[in-house]
Length: 439
Image 1 (cartoon, one colour):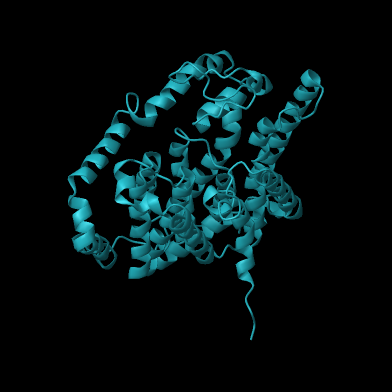
Image 2 (cartoon, rainbow, N blue to C red):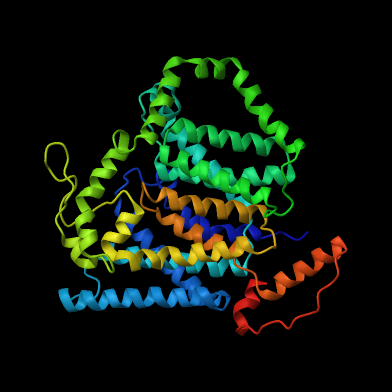
């Protein structure tokens, strides 16, 4: 009997996902444990090792992007040495660029090896639920919901969405009430945990997923009655159960939900949205004064500009500025060019792939929708470290296909439809080891 070792290909991504608090809490009760800082360096070393070892699997676009990131880090090191006498005076700031190596490492690895997505999702979901049960059971109580005591961190709730989208697409392709029940369990938890940014991200991801399916962009997935009817009936059946119905009919629960929706609709006046707006207003002058390249190392030395109600700085000086927005963070430190360095290639590559006629696999569609919704998530929170690894996986699973693959798909589709075959066109040449890995 031959034993399959495919499960080992889950490990590289899992190592990055374990940076989330839902997993580190199992081993490190103190969120500031110095071992966690050392672990981030280990992951950076792993990412670099994967880049070097599987470099031939990087596409030309990814290689050029890697070169730009390396040049940016080198330029920042020269600036650091010239102004402060040390090539890396503030490692915290350099980490905002070196974290991008996670994208390249995971991209290269998962272009070489197929990810056992089902095993990964089961492990991640099991870890998240176990953390909730062991460390945050109060977060699942009605009192916690009414008092808006979330307990579970927003990044962990975002990981729930990551898993939920996978089971959503798997159900639409393969069916199965278990997959559907898991999806609704995850969405129910997302609503109950009341991270409103994740609510919006989930709505956007599901809308994008629905559009991909409606336009036939997901392989083997269609909106059909056998799939849609259970999706409508299951919430009604569960909602009609005694305990659930009592909770849903509770006027305090409805009032809490209305207040959360009101916080979203009036983000500039109430809730945490007003807090973020205050932070944006505090740092906007510095962003406008340094629009192209940001403040870089000088920004780290800038005294804290964000004050609380007692006119005291929210954080201590020289500890970074702890922005609650990915976009504000990048614009402040690295300007428009620094922001574009991170987002242009992923957005461009995914748009190219979605526009190609070859459908996405259901797991790839889930990854594309999840990665896309994090662009919205970034307005309220900085991207967590594990997200860069997921972006690398997404770009590997949904890389633009070469001309030959697209032409072959069109020819096969025309043949199946009985359409006349076009005159064969020469296949344009591509660099040797680059697009060979994309086929």
